[in-house]
Length: 287
Image (cartoon, rainbow, N blue to C red; front, side):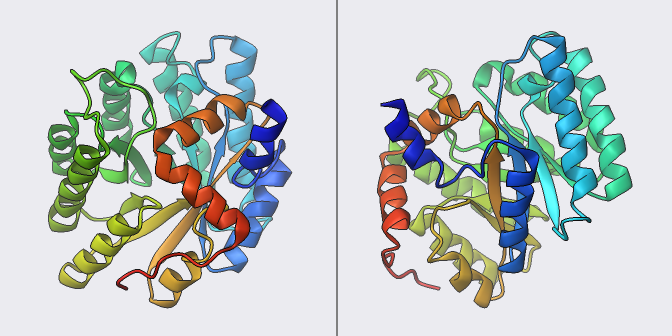
């Protein structure tokens, strides 16, 4: 079963090494896309593992210019110390920010399960006062996200809007696809009305079409963000229309938990993977 899943997962995972990720990123950049690189792994408690993760992210950022890539990194707080303490995680993010400053790289802070939402936002608010090229993910499936979004926009936060991939209880999250989609559209409208420099991270045709329509009404700096290997038939269409687009490129050996979440996140993802894998034409969008 694991071999079968890996055969599917390798469509969006660049490989095991930094060079695999940068090579994939170089290909994305040649095709007119920005690059967001994520080292797979989460919930680290080992000092060596945390230090190695930080070191690899630094190497990625230092290598962007050499590989001629316009790139960013995306970091999970539990990768770099949040499981030990918020203080340690903040200190480790500060080390990454120092490296990002030298290379002028953008840093995205990933959002994980709702158990970590408060601490993740607190870390982001602390760091944003010192480094502007910093963004945070907001999950449309969480009931609290509209309030979080308003608070973050009030301090100039840069947002990546995602649907959310973690299994949550009904007291903290919308459970139906319809309600998650409705909230995604509501939060996206708020971003276009009140935000700037944000990412619309989705493969959902309806969400993309709505973003295109909102972009005609509001002149905002934003980009679409999609996983490597998914909706490849649509990406050049959006770029040709003048939209910015970045590919999210995961790499590393710890691919199994991430891949299972991607497939469980929405049944639609399985269909999109199959469509992309077979290189079939997607249903036309209103763009």
